[in-house]
Image 1 (cartoon, rainbow, N blue to C red):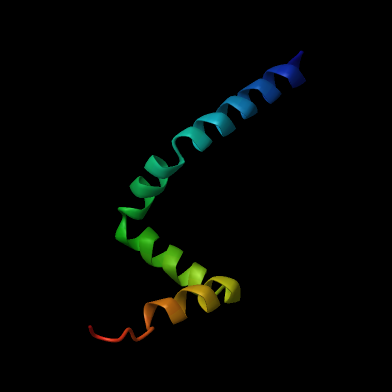
Image 2 (image 1 turned 180 degrees about the vertical axis):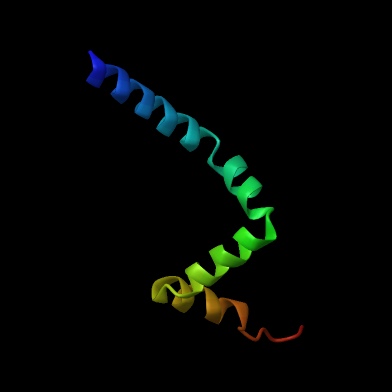
Length: 63
């Protein structure tokens, strides 16, 4: 019975976090220190850096 209770609580928490994931992310990233840490961590990941950096500094012709 204890395992069932723990499993139910964990599943409820996961569902709530999934439902409010963007609100939670915006709240966390509103804190400048945490936002800086998130950027530093993500830029240390080669996959993210290779996909984002070229798009940021890509030159587009002026029309």
